[in-house]
Length: 134
Image: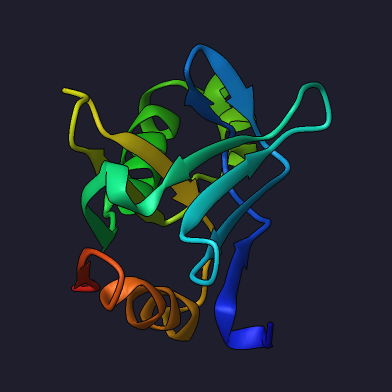
């Protein structure tokens, strides 16, 4: 197995899968055809590629809206300065499963090239859409 068989995300908000939170790593493995979610508190969970209908990777403007909202609050209420500590990851990865209504949503801090690399990594395995409009 070489480095092109795996893609790992380490910097993301915890994701809820089957009523458990996973916040350690997310690994896309093309050789074994699964997405592995790990946590330091319980056993890893796997989603196999044949369960995935499509995946959408897009740059989410919620971060800009958060700062606009904070600026507005600061204008009216000086006490909300504590909210400046909040940093939402700018990338939203939605994994749509064939038998589930709600997608699995991953909020991650990725560079533009990493998002493009993830999209290219998964394109041959299942439908992948990269929307990086800023």
